[in-house]
Image 1 (cartoon, rainbow, N blue to C red):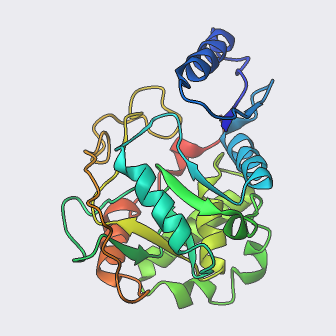
Image 2 (cartoon, rainbow, N blue to C red):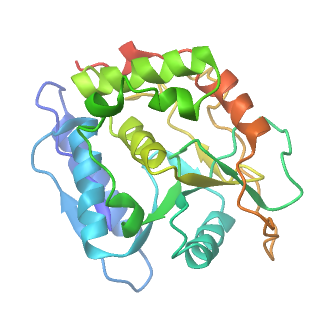
Length: 264
């Protein structure tokens, strides 16, 4: 299933680039399969195009593995996702399976993966049952914003301020994105993510002109991917790894760059 935005009329040559990209993708499918395409004729932007594309995906299938165009997976990423999708199919505690590990070399568990509150989407998988909780407009935010909801989830004042600012900016329409709404949906459902104990996907899209990843010196740029060992070693309990999450909040979500995601 291929989802693509349309050309931006304000960018010279964008129409040709869109057509070229679609042709490359279609010609690269060299295995026997049904190909379904969802191409927008006009430029919708990150927020609307990705969210509407994922709505289309989950209106057609019960589960999916999702890759953005600048995410390069290790081959074992797919088997990992397939096995996790099957194992946690009916477990509503689990909302997301991610291929990302942002612990920067720190091993957080003796098992193949651990559970987290954080939603990393540079290569991920999920189910229709989870995605049905998604609302790109985050309409519930105005209802629960001031009732201590975030304080009940997070135990750090800076983290609470960070996510309050992020969610408020998304709700107001100040950020052209779709992913913070997915974080919000997962947290509202008290959902957990599965994160591998090694990084399975490298984001190679950090470069000038990148939509949200324009700093090639970012510590997560081209983060090396590794192989997942099989058979998978499953943790005996579904318990969030607090040490890993605290590290993620401090290193990955400590300085919001709202301007980089602002409209225009």
